Length: 90
Ligand SMILES: [Zn+2]
Image 1 (spheres, rainbow, N blue to C red):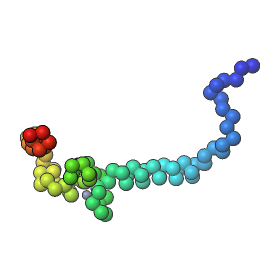
Image 2 (image 1 turned 180 degrees about the vertical axis):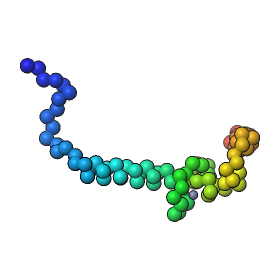
Image 3 (image 1 turned 90 degrees about the vertical axis):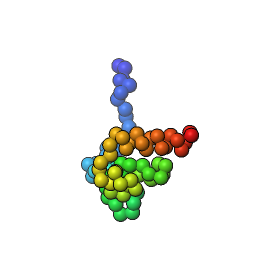
Image 4 (image 1 turned 45 degrees about the vertical axis):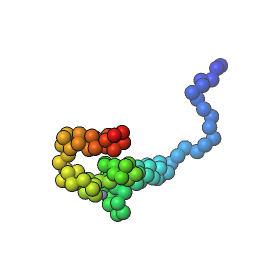
């Protein structure tokens, strides 16, 4: 009789529910630490890169007033894009 290639005979113990919970918790903490604002003790999610992409901050800590006010218009994005383009390739 031929054994199926999907059946394994591993001797590794099955993970317990508490170890799975610890793994999930560690993953959640890692994801949060990766995605939160780079300002010390700020718990908000970092959505906006600043300083040439070196840091990511939340809307409250962004240096641009329009981002802090939550009023980013298409014209604002176009103006910043043109300024960046002129700086990089005049
Ligand atoms: Zn922040």
